[in-house]
Structures are given as structure tokens and as C-alpha cells.
Length: 383
Ligand SMILES: Cc1ncc(COP(=O)(O)O)c(C=O)c1O
Image (cartoon, rainbow, N blue to C red; front, top):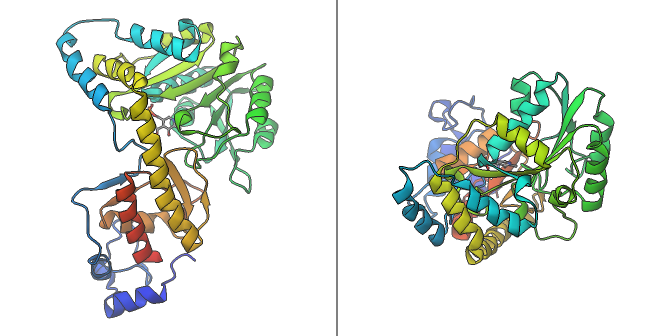
């Protein structure tokens, strides 16, 4: 229950907690309440836990291991060419074309998939109209469309927290220019059933664009999942799939992402992009896509980290969404601002608030040993 104090915490925190002077509240920017633990309480409760010497980043769905050693070497080697205007992308596109068995004309590289999403949002808003999306979902495309005047039609996920394709279909209006889907979704790391998604994408793309964001594609290991890239391979129009080198490849800061679509749409997107490809990112991505060992290692460690956090949720009886990505979504039953402020005090960054689910926390997977510390802190504060 939100704001309640466990018996154990009362014992732990004792008078310091009960006497929580509002003045020494640690909840920066958040009005203190009688239930807000004091700094003294937090510090005494957490003192017993050995604290890592660095901030733990469980906030942005990054890869705690990346870039791979081979990618790091490629970055270093690229520096010799950093003075030249080279077409850095052609080798990478050729590699992806072979990997995905798709023509090079079907691929564009962006400054992160963030740029691909922004261009999708721009395309959707050039003609006045609406954009249909799940709620909650990742904001990259929809916030761009919103900024450029499209009306957002947000369709709440269903009671099982799944993207509600039927409700999204019903929400489409004659003026809807684009439908955005994220699979696996973010912040809810669940999947859309492959057949239902395929039928939906084929039907909806007859009259308007469908954008499927597959940023977490490489983390999925479930027969219920299918990438929509196959539809593009089969020649269907009005479909864009985005992928990224930021997640499994751990190259978030080097800004490499991809669009897969019909060649006409790829050409249109390329005309609208403003980013320029950087040589370090392009060479690192090319190296990393070939480093299968690093990708396997990332997946193994991610699974271990998820086991640590999901194990805690099972023991504490907390609802969470089975993850098909590198983060989980936990129903803490507490105000996310309160939980993230407490975690920050303990040296852990967790995900931002995702309205309307303000008593859920998105927790990204750092290294398993770092997630052990997260679990110790969470148990101490709320267990
Ligand atoms: C679903 C989703 N799409 C796209 C992105 C953007 O990734 P990038 O711009 O680094 O490729 C993110 C980043 O967190 C994401 O979660």
C-alpha cells in the first residue's frame, strides 16, 4: 500500500523515523509527508549494506557491459580516418542487408533510432491528422508528432498491461496518418502476439503508415514474437521497423539506429533526416554486429540480473511484467517519485515516472551483482 510503514522499518528506523523532521526530508522537490522517511532513517537503515563505489544506472535501459572489446578496438582504429568525409555507412548497410536477407535499399541509418523515430513523427504530422499509439509507450515518435501538431490518440493497455490492438484499431480515424507500436513495449516489457500483430499491421498499413519500434528485438526469446521486418522483406509498403545499436550492442552514446522500410519510404526518410553518421559509431556497430559472443554474454548476464530482481518480486509478492527486454516494470504500490528518490539516496538510478502508472517502477538491468545491491536496498526500505 502506498505510504505505509512496515513493522520492520519502524524497528529499524525507531525514533529517527517517527520523528521524521520534515526539514531533513531527502525527497528533493517532493513535498514531505508524515510517511516520508528522514535522511537519518534512510542512512541508518542502509548503513548495514555494503555500498558500491559508483552510481548504479538502472534508469535508461543501457547495456552495462558495452561496447564490446572488439567494438572498442574498432572505435580506436577509426580515429585515423576521422579527418575524412567518408561514406561510413555503406559497409554497415551491406552487413545488415546480408544479416537480415533484405535489400540495401530497404535500410537507412539514423543518429540513433531516436532520429528514425523523430522522422517518423515528422512524416506523420506533415499532413494534419492524428497518430494512434498505446499508452504507456516510448515517447520518441509520439512526442515529435505532438510537437509538430498531430493529435495523439493514446489507447490504454488492457488489464493485463498488453498493447490492446483491437482498441487501437477502433481508435483509428479517417485522419489517422500513422499508428505507432513498440514491440517489446517500453516501459512495459511485454510482447504483442505475432499473428495478431501481423494481421493488424497488414490491415492498417493498407491506408496509413504503421511504425513498429523494435529497439529490444535482440533480447526476445519467445515463439510468440515475430519481427515485422519480414513484411518489409516481402515488399509491403507503409511499414517502418526501427532497430538500434544502443541496447544489446551497448553503443548508446555513439548514436546509431536503423530504419527498415520499402525503398520509397527509405528515400523519403533520408530526405528528412538531419543527422550525419559518425565514423566511430558506424565502425563500432559493424564490429559489434559480428561479435556474437558479446551479444550472447549480454543476454546471459541480462537474464541473471532479471532473475535477481524477479526473484525478489516473487518473494515480496510484488506484481511485475515478465520481461522480454533489459528492464522490468514493477508494481511497487508506492509513488514512483518517492521510490526513485530513496533509491537515488542509496546510489541507484531507476526509471522516471510513466503516467498514468505512477505506482509502478521501471528498473533497467545493470550487472547482476549491482541488481543484488538494488534488491538489498529495496528489501530494507520496503520489504
Ligand atoms: C523503445 C525505444 N525505442 C527507441 C529508443 C531510442 O534508442 P536510440 O535513439 O538510442 O536508438 C529507446 C531508448 O531507450 C527505446 O526504449
